[in-house]
Image 1 (cartoon, rainbow, N blue to C red):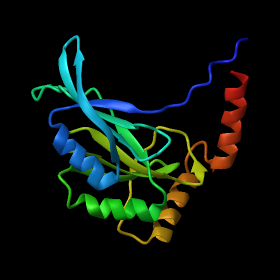
Image 2 (image 1 turned 135 degrees about the vertical axis):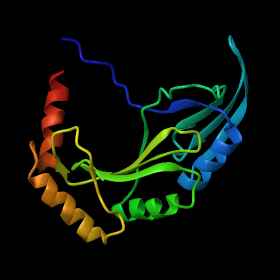
Image 3 (image 1 turned 45 degrees about the horizontal axis):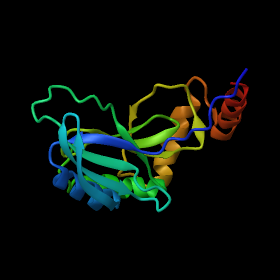
Image 4 (image 1 turned 30 degrees about the vertical axis):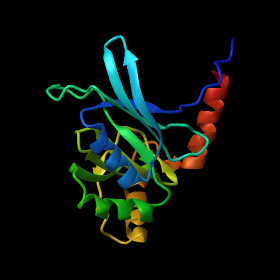
Length: 184
């Protein structure tokens, strides 16, 4: 059996209606840096591109591309997910979202993560999340109160997770996935 090629996820590009507005949002809230910008001729006409990154080793992690029709009846992006450094940072961002032009703010736990979902200024669903030390069978989505102290949030998530199918320490789940992926 041939091993699969060595690949890793690098970046995503999204079509936007207003590149300047979206650039301001992603640089302000998430601290992205504009690494390049410009106009590109394509078979469907010229598009304006804004390249954004938070990693100096990646020219871009997010590309904003003009050309999204304002009347588009359905957004094909299910979600863009961003891992944050700690539960404290997640709670801080949750509080900050109240001052941003976003909608549908929803703090939840998946047992294996604590997340905040919301819609960015153009309606793209965003997830900010932090992993927990546990794994539970997915999918799972339960509301959680991110105004509580961090220790109380973690205790609530752990108590809930311990009662769910598939509960195990994340390290055990990772070891199992490493074995399965190596076997592939």
